[in-house]
Amino acid sequence: MTEPNAPALLAGVAKVEITAGLAVQTDDPLYERVAADTRNDPLYAKALVLQQGDTRVALVTVDAVAVAEIGTIDSGYLDRVRARLADEVGVAAENVLVNASHCHGVVCDDVDAKTVAAVRSAAAALVPVKAGAGRGLEDRIMENRRLKMRDGSEADVRRAYALPPDEEVEGVGPVDPEIGILRLDTLDGETLAVLFNFACHPIQGVPSGGNTADISGFAAQVIEEHTGCTAFFLQGCGADINPVLYKDTDNPPDAEPLGTLLGLSTLRALKGIKSAGEARLACVRRRLNLPRADLAPAIDALRAEQERLLQALQGTSLNFKEFVPLLVKHSLGGAYPAYAAHRYLHEEKMGCGHLKKLDADNRAALEAYIANIHVMEALTRVKANLGLLEKHHRKNQAAPGPTVEAEVLGLRVGDFVLLTFPGELPVEIGLGIKARSPHACTFVAGVTNGYLYYTPTVEQMENRGGAQEDSDCLLAAEWQALFESEAADVLQVL
Image (cartoon, rainbow, N blue to C red; front, side):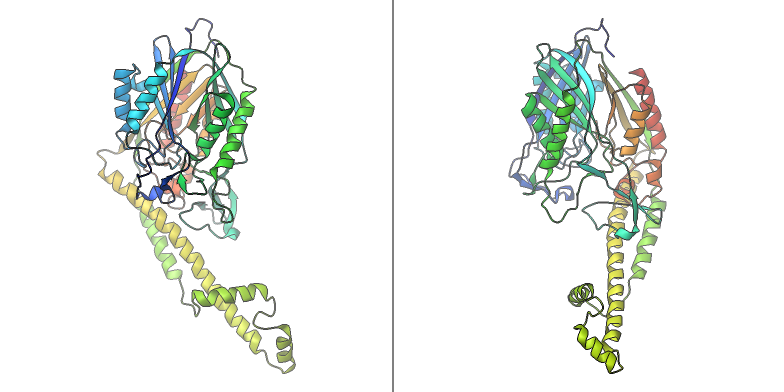
């Protein structure tokens, strides 16, 4: 919606590289697959400053996993940045939005100073702009990582542990193929900035294993090279969304083709977005107190499952060295795995079935060994998710109160409406908020202005301990209704 009497909308952009130096390395398990001493492509802090009348907003995107709690940006970063921006750039704390792409890049130690420098440069480069909002479509690069099992439970696709057996998987969850786009053009028609919001974990990696901004970084690079603008990726509701073929073992992981597709799809959509000369700028911030979960019952249930699985292990006559060749023989041998067919036929003429008896015994041993493998794989999943539950249980027990504070921020630039939240939001939450919004171009960004770990749906929490989203979580199920109610109110105000 445009407003003819609104003051001119001004915008300025800047970006600063925040890639860690080659000497920097970290033993954080989060980066165990990242060779931080190998630089593949640059990581950036990008700043967009918007001003209309007395309202000034700073939107920052950082190529990092989060801006608190986890990763190489410490939990004091946001407060330090906001304090300096209020003092040096005139942007009030409530008008600062910092979104982490959620890539697993390792950033430099002075990322807060470089963030402030980027915003300062953007504020010094303000020019009148026109704004346009629209949507793109990309459905080839991501997949829902939650697996719906035949027994009613859910599992997930992670590199941290094995997938469940194919025959136990019944279905998968949804994805959101929408790319939310804000286009800002100067008055002479040059594209100054493109904001693109998309829901997917940018965690594919690159063949070298080096430090990378991943899918979102490559997508931004494509947009910038073709338009000359500064492209800002805003992580959407991608908590349960993986890059496609995330666990492929036949090819090296490579985020660049996926990022290129996302960038090209954004460019295609940009062609159909027209910018308007008058656009309203508004920013609304709310604070929520969300209830912490009592994770003790889930921990007890998962420990009981762990014990059940341990008791399900059974002794077998095979070891791994014997198992592999025997499995190959029975897989290739058909009815005659132990020897050639003529030997079986000879035994049949002689009235004996020694080889058939051997085959039956070996098949039973193989089945027992394979059953143990499945139990072992299930135990690794239980162990990983139990560790997450125990970590958050300790955190909740040590907390000074029963709630955790979360910031909800609403930003409107013309017809482009963005709602943010610090947790890793599942795709179902984003789809629901967008469907219920009174604004045609509403988009949702997680991992913004803090970090609250995963914030799964009420239904996903019923599976607590079965997947990362429902295990790596501080909150009780009531969080969802509280957030969605506040989100609806913010959208109405905007």
